[in-house]
Image (cartoon, rainbow, N blue to C red; front, side, top):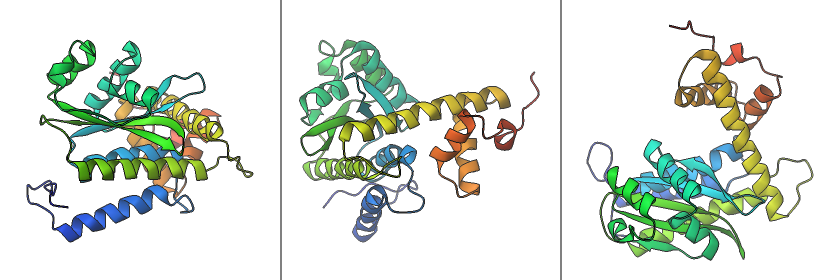
Length: 260
């Protein structure tokens, strides 16, 4: 592997350091038996590892629901959320196409796709992304979603980087299959994907509850929820479930701030 992604200080990591980070990424995604494994962190971890280790500047992951639509499971930042939402609203874009075809989709020049995806291409270029690489989230013959990586540089993602991204996506999908929200896990793919989507929906509700209660942004509410769970060594999923069912008081997560 010849390409190395610079560290935040602009210096390149050594080849060994990058390999170590990749190994840890695969372990963290695949180890469903770890005591701190949490389905709500699975796709966040996938996107974070891809953006942190590969030649990508932003990313997002979507997963299919029982009705054949897509749901956003993770995004690297506000720009990525916007681009994922545009695909859901318009029903077109690389993530949508990849999910339905089950095949990787490389877009070396988003400017050339204005006729194909007018809203997405325009929005991506406006926030500085010039190319993308989308990969299916798959379990054997089942395609359960898609991972899109956006790049500020034009051109295709290097083949070896594409292979790593697909392997990371496959590891996350496999972890989802082995994870279960029930004591008696079912091996049915749809059951697992819908359970993960339900947890994600509950997380969005919980973030809204905390944001409204404490008078903070949704982003800060998410940080407060994760910090609360981490401090108590509890899973984020369990914390969210307790909050939305009323078993956990909002004051325990964040005190209400005075309104101005």
